[in-house]
Length: 145
Image (cartoon, rainbow, N blue to C red; front, side, top):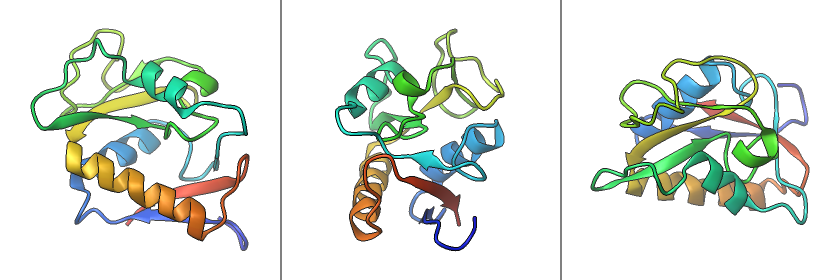
């Protein structure tokens, strides 16, 4: 990151499962750490990104919800960014169309994480967009602290 670029930081303490998922996704080559994500443009739908990454056919164990990365609110999300899905060990996804350990800059990942963590991380992202004035199409980074 250079001067003038903005990043949201997630602490592993309150978000252990979320942080592990984002970290694994970035290590697999997905953007956000060294290559910026861009917020969706006006008229684009985060629901399209979310439903492609976390379709209803994915079994959700009790107390867990499907987390997607890159975030549904980004141009690199599952629907708009293109590419194939992937997942990681400890993500509780058995669907064969989500290979464990796939790599590359294109694509998206899904992971079942505690519902409370997922909701809180999403709320923090919305707050970050507002407080940092990340507008439609603006770039930003994601850091795991």
